[in-house]
Amino acid sequence: MSRPDDSRVSEELPHDLMIWVLIVSEMLVFGAGLWAFLAVRISDPFGFSEAAGHLHPITAGLGTMLLVTSGLFAAIGARYLTRWPLVLAGLGGAGFLWLKSHEWAALIGRGISTETHPFFTFYYLLTGFHAAHVIAGIAILIVVMLRRRAAEISAGVAFWHLVDLVWVAVFPVIYLMGGA
Image (cartoon, rainbow, N blue to C red):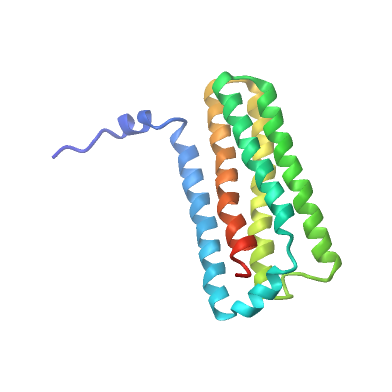
């Protein structure tokens, strides 16, 4: 039985193989964080429910809509190699960060930190790590938008979709199931 030629397999993947290695590894890291959150939640469902009551799921839902819409704009930008949709995608990410910063500021203003409860340890770690990815994603969108090379735009947009996908997993676990 013959093995497929590695170069042929990588030619069938859209984008460079390394972007897929990055995307899969980041998904595994976020997945592990979410599983750990859920595992610890089992030990204190009442405490997690009470802690989750301090969050604003409607604001987080608006942020989710911003990110998902920005993913649509990024896809349009990649499809048509047009700058303005990529600009709109980056602005959607910036709007998401603005909403998240206000939520963090409100929590910190009430003295809620990573030390308050294990829920908030996970909350700050997961949302903070995601925010770092949003910032990186915006930077990547800016770079690929300025360079306007189809392969780079496509890889940058794939990373942006990782940012969307991760949040689509984080949002329900933290905001909807966190206190359920």
